Amino acid sequence: MSRVFSVYDVNRYIKGIFSTDMLLTDILVSGEISNYKYHYSGHMYFTLKDDQSLIKCVMFKSSAASLGFEPENGMKVIIKGYISVFERDGQYQLYAQKMQPDGLGSLHIAFEQLKAKLQKEGLFDSEYKKPLPLFPSCIGVVTSSTGSVVKDIINVATRRNNNVNIKILPVQVQGLGSADSVAKAIKTFNLLKNVDVIIVARGGGSLEELWAFNEEVVARSIFASEIPIVSAVGHETDFTISDFVADLRAPTPSAAAELVVPDMDSLKDTVLALRKRLVIAVKRETQLMAMRLSKYESSTAFSQPLDRIYQERLKLDSDLKQITQLIHTRMIEKKAELSNFAAKLNALSPLNIMARGFLVAKGEDNHIIKRAQEVSIGDKVILTFLDGEAKCTIEEMKLRME
Amino acid sequence: MKKEMTFEAAMKELEQVVVSLESGNLPLEDALGTFEKGITLTTLCNKKLDQAEKKITMLLEKKDGSFEEKDFVTEEN
Image (tube, rainbow over the protein chains, first blue to last red):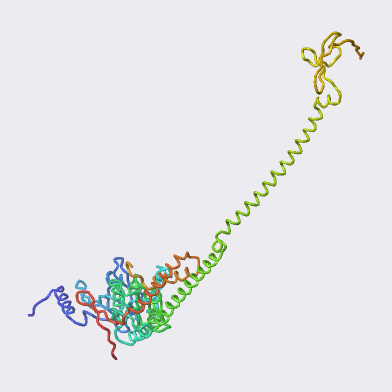
């Protein structure tokens, strides 16, 4: 009889076989989601089916957290993961590590979901848009190292500036894992800080082919970048989430190169024009100053330095003349006044009266006798004449009755 | 100069210098100083434009996580 195994041993054995199989340990599976359950633990349980078959799936919290969209029943997806056995139930299932929507319908739903979510968070807000440098000394390019995109960017950039400095970080731009590759490259440039601006580019393709640029991990890395980013994904009519988050959207990769690399000739012209304006301005300024200076030099203060003194002296002379005149007039006035007084005085003088024949009579005590009553017969009086005196005795008196 | 100015900063300052000189209300000494500064800035801007050298490289990650730069060669050249 052969050896008897326990159920557990069987399941362990099968699991061992699964884990050594090259295909089962790293597989891509496409199908439609059904029976989707989002467990409170953060794990996702669902069934993946097509028209003929189904397989149980689980996506653990650690992988589910980085999912950029909300799985829904009926959504078509591609899952990257491995197939292993859950020993307890004896069931094999698909352990999903990455999942992306598949098919236009699913992709559109996921696109709108993420766009709405990031918009609500403000990742597209214009206040976060950084200006591009006017003249980047080094340009970082995140794209595939093969294909026409990288060549187009180099061609346009070197045509505008033959001395352009470009660093290319080659990435996978399509398929599962491409989003991580792009996000990592953006982070790398931010870590190395060796470029002034980054172009994230991919050529045209279907919505599926451009999908990496619609994934949350890429959007977040663009938003977190301290270096300005220009997004140029697909053709002019293709809009991706990267375009919305980036500091600037270029319609094509070639256009991105044009936006980022300034035209050397026009820049040199600008510098030259500024220099010309500078020279003209300083010339005009010095000419203006020279004119002002010559105007000052020709003023009387410089041409006839003694003029002021002459002016003052003339004025002084004129003042002096006026003062002399004034004093002279005053003196004539005073003289006239004086002779007037003298005339009046003269008229009042007693000598003048005596000249007209009046005498002054005085007593022996020398007092002036004004009335006859003051004297008696026999009294001696002195009569004063204009030219002398005479002593007389009163002999007769006649008083006039008043 | 301590740290060399960026091209943007130099251009911005150059424009301010030109505008202030054109306004014509600077004292003469200042005007001459400003002019000198403007000329220095144009020289710097031109130098910045000329000194960049054409270099197209590809960054390749090494096993230890560091990067090495290799000249980028497109198929046809």
